[in-house]
Length: 205
Image (cartoon, rainbow, N blue to C red; front, side, top):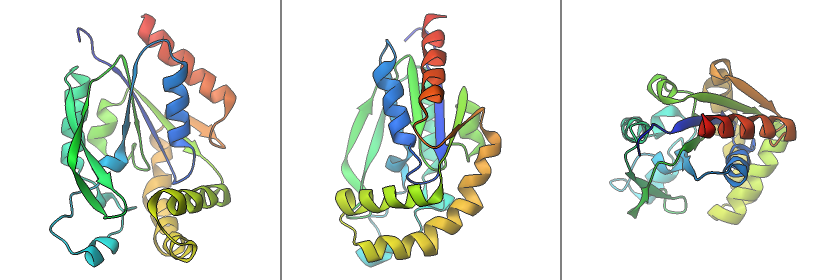
């Protein structure tokens, strides 16, 4: 690539609609968009037992491999391709395979702590925080974890109350202050259109 990609960071609580917004941007912009999920940057835990991996607090900043994510984002900002890890949420560790990612004109990073790390924020051109009511978020997480990650209702509810909620209040919600744009109630049509127009203007400039 001859120019640097335009990097949009989308943060917010679990189940707030970050992935939906990222996907809608990608599907509506007249250019290729690279989607990058922070979920793939959970630290490798293959050296731990399955029970130990289950006890990891995945909503705490320490659960992420920040060094790798920073390095990959810096490479993407230079226009370089990267090989990103893939995470297995049933085994609670990385898969053996990686995915080759080519930076397109627009790159969207989404994750609960996408706006948390100072070096990540330094690479982001537009910081977005998605603010959605807690009852909506917990219902979305319940459905996702049961359908996609093999969890039980009891397990999801207990985990939300003991870990997700306090971590959101301590680490995720404060990142709202670093956002350039705050989107209320998840996939807000007017906010989505604003992001689309911003992405299009960056491509055309």
